[in-house]
Image 1: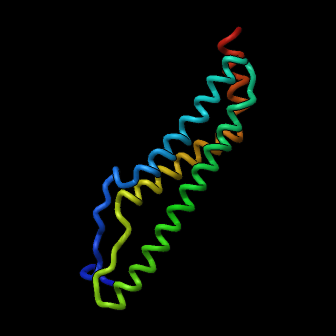
Image 2 (image 1 turned 60 degrees about the vertical axis):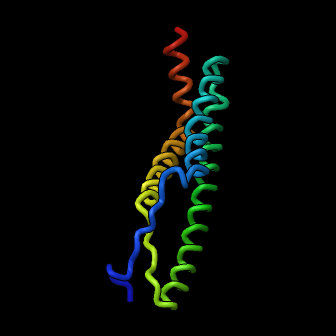
Image 3 (image 1 turned 60 degrees about the horizontal axis):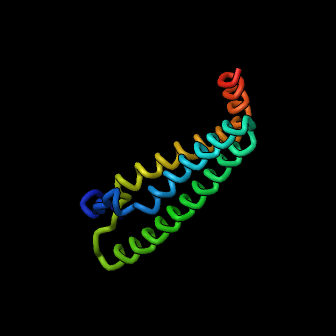
Length: 127
């Protein structure tokens, strides 16, 4: 049985999660770069596709997170069997999960409504 005295919070710093942070930054910046290209050409071609690329990046990051959690689960089973304290999920990893959710919503909105947004922006900027 797991109770508070047998649970350890692992110290995870943000810099330990640099691959995930770079992935999230890429997922945010790629659609914005494609938006600039679309505005320069006055078309709505690339921006929604940038949202799909961002969604792909988010899915890859979530797959990695699930793999890490599965490894943690197996390691915790070994720790519990040997009488050691098991590790909880760090606050940093939990915050990264929420950030990933926000980027997924951002990317979904771009892929669904990006063409309408670009068309409205082109009309507003170039009238």
